Length: 132
Image 1 (cartoon, rainbow, N blue to C red):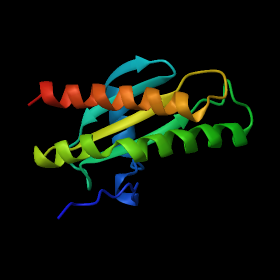
Image 2 (cartoon, rainbow, N blue to C red):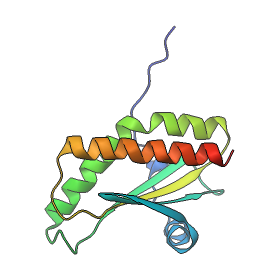
Image 3 (cartoon, rainbow, N blue to C red):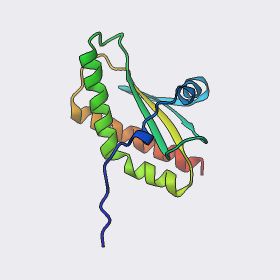
Image 4 (cartoon, rainbow, N blue to C red):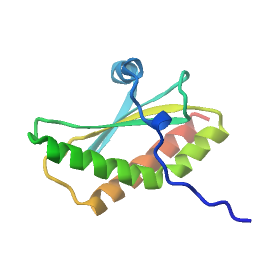
């Protein structure tokens, strides 16, 4: 019997802890792939294997409507593609905190965000394999 994958983004998977976010910015590792800057860190005290947060700068997007739209697109692309990385982390009994910042200055199309999110998740997957 084939197991059906669930594409969800539950509350436990959202990065909301101020303490963890501050640790990410203080001593987390990062890489950039335009239009994203990704901060990541192995996380010992996490409730889920993979916790993720998203942000858009108000420097380039003055209207909250635009910032919220970009975050919504980022979350949707992430939600549909995170299962491989998440299952790998669960299998290895590891947890990771990830924070994705949109650094572009134009409103993106969903297909563009989807492709770039795919690249980011593949890079995070490779990083977890190197640390094994």
